[in-house]
Length: 322
Ligand SMILES: [Zn+2]
View 1 (tube, rainbow, N blue to C red):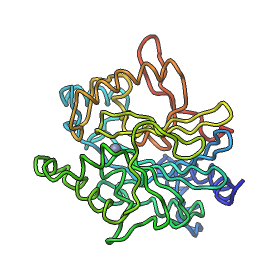
View 2 (view 1 turned 135 degrees about the vertical axis):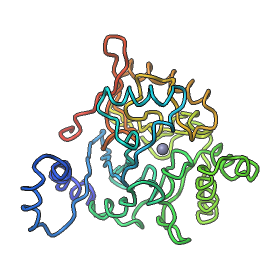
View 3 (view 1 turned 180 degrees about the vertical axis):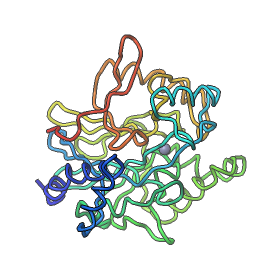
């Protein structure tokens, strides 16, 4: 077990428990008890997958207006979310989860969060600190696609946040998000992703463009999930007959996996996104494998299951998985 594993494990359950209590009905008593606390706690969750330890971290959250969802009228999206107690005044709450993979030798971070560019975000640095990891100890960063909510944390103040990490991004996304013609034609809300991608390319000159499905390091491989963006990828961690598939933006809370026809405003090719979800959801339900999804409620771990023919998300029992 590495330093990370030991330290994070000792923090894992209590930290998550305390964070959950902070918004629960016991807030007053909790607030009083907390007056003696000396340090802010950061929610984290950890599972093992064979020889890997995967730690879920969270940069924060943002509420996405019902009008941001495509494929169905906003009223229908809202009604569906309300039926699941997922409708908030400003829309559906998206978490921004990141995953830190420790194979005993290397630390690989999957995505870096919006880093304050939207919603209540910017907590990833504190989360890393809480597990005892400095940014310069990260050996590799895999960015699942070039939307700013997945890569915003790569850079701050014109400098790289992960100075010693190799950076891996799908070649199709690098090409798309650095294309001046595509930027010029894009709506305003996508410009920040183009700008963040340009900065990423400039500040990470040894950026490694990924072509198709391949292994990044032993037991860590890329899965092609094109649709949400041209180079949208997942990351599979596999060892000893166990696996975890991090699927990034394949799933959004409240709407998926029940309705693969619902997409998101940020998708340039709604048909491609729809096709990938329509293929992936039933396959995942059949396989029953453990999934991690960026925007599902923290820690984003769960499974797609068929419940009388209807697909639904089943959160995993993450706290005690060994
Ligand atoms: Zn996203």
